[in-house]
Image 1 (spheres, rainbow, N blue to C red):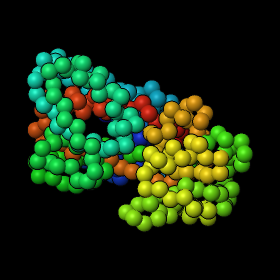
Image 2 (cartoon, rainbow, N blue to C red):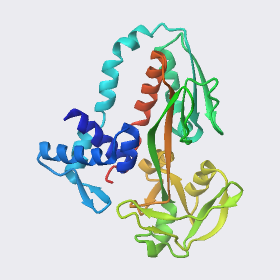
Image 3 (tube, rainbow, N blue to C red):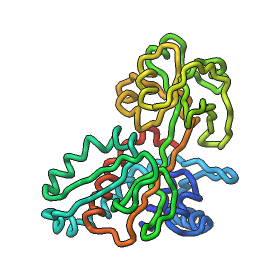
Length: 299
């Protein structure tokens, strides 16, 4: 049952049977069968199936919240001896990390790790293109690629939503439906030197729409887009949820139409097949620090 609960945690966080199958290297049909078996053993439904789509039930949310940290507990327990034995390690860790995810969440915790392992040297390469696998011990990257001597697996999925400032909400109100977005002003992105057209996907139905936004501001950096949006009284903007944690909690930013994503981004873990103990410990540390930041767990 424990293995199936761990599988359900992955399904909850990815909301995608295919990604679960890829991450666990099993057949998609096996994922479905194991979820059904777990529901039978628990005596309650975890998901409500709607054709190829599904929704998490209230009981599923309850089970997830109770067991969401269990994988880290297992990892910490199994790595306890390795952690103690590596405490005085003088090895060097070279890792490639995604820039924005690191800047918003991981950077503030790096010194904590270094204090625990005072003799370890840490080289962090913030990803711009494909990581240099000639020098890195492992990489967390947007690129799903196969690399000789490395193992690639799905790591996590990040979501972007529409946001507005508190000032905007007071002046214009918060859009309550897709129709309310018509002719709303939007700060938009420039990607690969081209103006990006925002499409929105309903997380429950997979319906995709192209809202009729009034886009006259385009920027090529999401961090600057967020900064403009925080102070904007006339514009909505799309942003990664992990970038808006503090402002969302403080009420400075409001998530608009939570059931609709404006973008999703998959991250992949690419690690050496013979990963060292100290690398596993640092990877576990990273995973732990990334585990708390989800704002909207009601899928």
